[in-house]
Each structure stands twice: as C-alpha cells, then as structure tokens.
Length: 297
Image 1 (cartoon, rainbow, N blue to C red):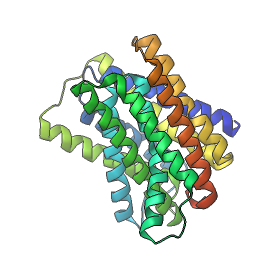
Image 2 (image 1 turned 90 degrees about the vertical axis):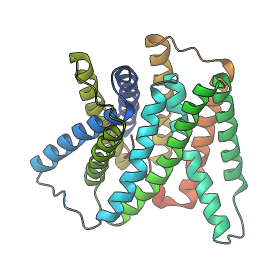
Image 3 (image 1 turned 180 degrees about the vertical axis):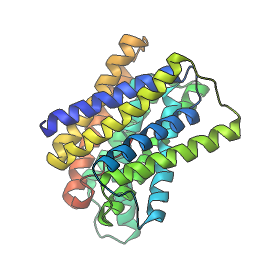
Image 4 (image 1 turned 45 degrees about the vertical axis):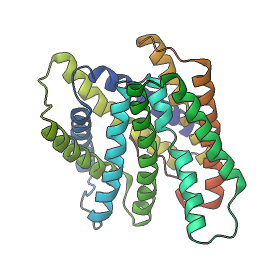
C-alpha cells in the first residue's frame, strides 16, 4: 500500500480509536482505558515479534522508561480530555505537539546562545497558540476549561515523547520495541492510577468490546503510521496526519452531536497551518526529527 494511503488509514484508525475512548469513558476511568490499551498493545507486539523472530530485549531500559513516562502521561491526559470535550477539540489540542516541538527548538537555541532564531518558527508557534485560544474560547466555563488545559498539556508531553523517540532511534532501537515498552508503561501507569483512585469497574460486553477496540485500533494505527513514515515524504505524511482532525470532527457531529462554533473551526485551521509550518521548518533545520510522529497515541 502506498505511504499516502497508509497515512490516511492511520489517521482514520486513530480517530476511530478516539470514538471508542469517548464511548468507553461512560464505563471506565482514563487510567483503566490506558491500562487496557497498553495490555492489548503488549500482547499484539509480543505475538508479532515472536512470530517474526525479533527480540524484545533492550540495552537502554532507562531511555525507554523516560520515553514511556512522558508518552503515557500524554496519553492519559488525552484520554481524560476526550471523555469530556468534543472529539475534534480534544484531537486538535493533542495535535499541538508539532507546535510545542517548535517552541522547544526555539528555547534550545536561546539557551545554547544561538545567534539567530528563525522568525518563521516563532510566527508558527504564535499562530498555533492563537488557534488554541480560539478553540478553547467556546468552552470557557471552569470545568470545560480544565479538560481543555489537560488536552493542551497532552500535546506538550507528546512533543517531549517524540524527542525521546528520536533519541531511541539514534540508539538503534527498532520501532516495534519502542511501541512495546511504551505499552508496558501504559499498563503500569494505568494500574497504579486506578489502584490509587480505587476506580476499577466491572465489565460489560459493550465495555469489553470498546476496550479491545481501543487497543487494536491504536496498535494498527501505530504500525500503519510507522510504515508510512518509513516509505513516504515527511511533509506529505505530516499534512495527511491532520486528516485526523477532520475525521474526528465528522465523528463528533454524526455520533455525539458535537457543535463547534466558527471561532473553534478557525482555531483548528490555525493549529493545522501552524503545525505544518513548524514541521516544514524543523525538518529543514533538524532532519533527525523527521520521524517524530510515527509512534505516539
């Protein structure tokens, strides 16, 4: 399958996973969903690696720990926000990760005493945050704003996870192993969170099916996206990745009756433009980061 079709498939699978997470939130807490999503991922990747004769042993467990910590926190906050926000809003805030990456690049340049910070990158960051302001404006009551901030924070932590994925790639860790240990981290974090809150719920047939769907859809989406980035052009893939927001908007309108104001739609467009601009500018200045979006969610 061509890289472009793989990317479209991955975005559709991630958006569909978001639907399942939103539906499962009626019966389970975010920690439980993260736990079962990780459990399914671990079982699938372990079975695949065994079938293909691949090893899951790693020489850099510490690097996997920090990548899993930031990635699982991002995932948990994203699932938390999906439960209470319109699906497209939660998806858009998580997709702010590209803008956060640009902000980190600017901050790193300043701290390292770089003589020049690309003003186009600064403009992309500012445009992205203008988009966030427009997206959150319709949900300014206190409770909704909290969920919006959780979604925004999930994007920032995702950006940190992407940086760590890049480091793991440079250390020679294959994608399937990174996904495996990320899923293990989800099991641990989800279990600890749910034990701390005492929020374990019993299972219904509907709930069990939704949890299984979340794990399978997430794993299939990760594998499709990984293959798309390995075959296709980074900027084309990054552009197609934002179809996830479109799919989420359609799902939200059709399944949940989500109503988005013109200002929220404008904000989403600004975030998409800012994310694409940031991806293009970063790929020119830091080619090693070109694979940063292949392993998250």
